[in-house]
Length: 357
Image 1 (cartoon, rainbow, N blue to C red):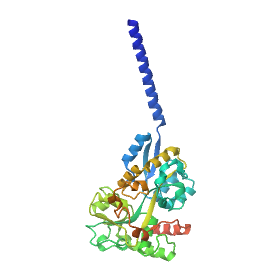
Image 2: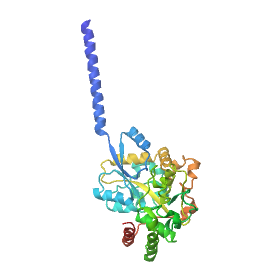
Image 3: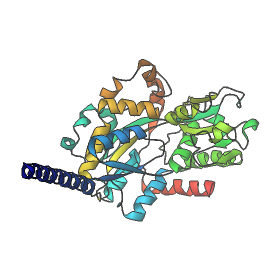
């Protein structure tokens, strides 16, 4: 009788040891197989809860590295030769340039089934975008201002570029040659893609005359410490969704797309050709384009989604907000950035250097 009990105890112990061994092996295997993606992105441009959900579903973690401007992003890529990142947020005009360097992986639609939800208008609006990227969000560049500090209605780029006395030292611009020179050209009635020497000369003169009133050429932050919130800045160039975000910190902040029109931008997600986690990167981009996920993300960043199925899930209030979704009339007055010839890029770089440095 005793021997039978001993056999049962030994058998149970053996079973327990086998179970524990299998469990430990499974945990170690999972740890060894756990993947990590490095996502090169703007700050405040991704919902952390969505990243957590992706990790819970797939076991893949996503770590973000932030850049402060398109130029800064390109510097990071140049420093590494395009290595060290798996997914990058790319502006439309840079896609062709980065693809030509061999840094971007072509997109295979069979690997990202949710591409079927993307509005073709935004996929093909920039050269090579359809080949190397997936649209993330689109929007406009306009003016954010404090209604309690600006004693007049804001409606024109000239309100920013020829600032009133009350705005001296309280204007914020963007440290991007395309954006900075583009709005000056637009204010003067020219195309923001102009390469005409005389028009560029006039744009530079306008910006140089404005310079004493400019507090900073760095993009203002969007949190409670923002210069627009504490009043150090009363008027700023700003992207529409960012204006909505900073409004959460101060209810007197307003946004306007000037009467002359502005720039229409599209941000894209691209997979880096040097990535060692391409399959996981494709899985991540596909996840972000699940309609319910894309709709939640649009509400987090306050930007218009290019995902038609996600758009159908958004509230009428969200879709009818003119700050998020500019009217067709306003969009007709606005332009997307086009790739400039080398001479045009050099001219703008020289203007920017004389102005900012």
